[in-house]
Image (cartoon, rainbow, N blue to C red; front, side, top):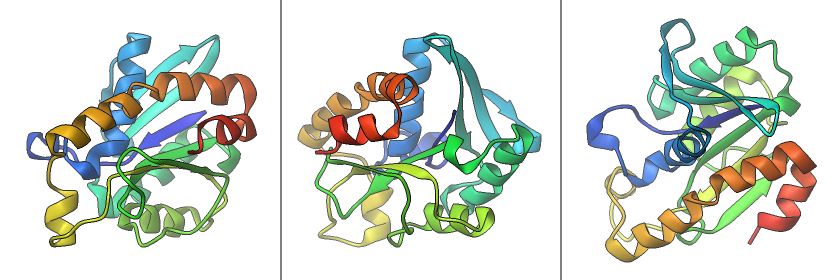
Length: 184
C-alpha cells in the first residue's frame, strides 16, 4: 500500500492547515518507529515500513502542493503499484475541522494537489481521505497556509493521532471497513 500525505515542504509550512496530509503520514511513521528519507529521483520523502506484517510506503511529495502529481506518478511507477494500492490524504476546507471523508474515488473538489495527481495518473479511481480544516472567512490562500488556532489544533491533533489506527484498519480489513468505521 502506498499512502501519500499532501503538503508543502519547508519549516515555514510546518503545522499549517495545508500540511494535514503530511501530519497524517508523519504520525504513522512515528508510531511505527520509521524515518522518512529523501528520494530525489521520486521527488519525495519516502518511508518504508511493515505494519502488522504488511508492507507500506509512506510518501510526502517534495514538489509542493500544486505539483504533487509529479511525485505520485514517479512513486507509483517505481513501485509498480496499481491504483487500488494508492491512498491519498489531504486537507479539505469544505469540511469542518477534524471531519473525515474517506472515498474510493472522486474528483479533485478544487484541491490543486488532487488536480495534479488526477492529471498525472489520468484517473480519479484511487482512494482518498479528506480531513476537514474548516472554511475560511478570510483569503483562501492565507487560510490554508496559516496555522490552526488553539482549539482547532487540539481537535486536529486528536484526529491525526488516529492515523496509525486507520492505516492498520485499512491494511487488515480493506477500504470498505475503513469507510464504514471512520467516516463521520
